[in-house]
Image 1 (cartoon, helix red, strand yellow):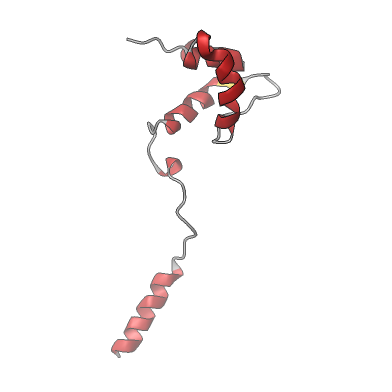
Image 2 (cartoon, helix red, strand yellow):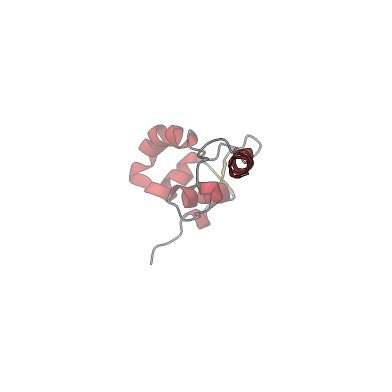
Amino acid sequence: MTADLLAQLPLFATDQQLAAAIVGKDRASMWVKAVIPQLEKKGFPRIDPLHDGRPVPLVRKFYEGYFGITAGFAAAAPDGKENLGMWESRRRTRRSADE
């Protein structure tokens, strides 16, 4: 059984604390410098200036979505603009042709 290192962190953790919990102490420095900027582009929680750390519950939620654990509408990207009126116009056209 693996230990949940994120659960052992304070509510707001530093990047170094998060890195050690997520990838281990040996790779933490590289992860902070190279990976966090890339993850922020994908929605990784930003540092809260009031608490001077990232909210650990949101980091956990980010990774659940990142790995597809929380499948659902929030995890799916929109496929385009909805045009619900197109169904109505097609029906009218079809009825007009049948009459």
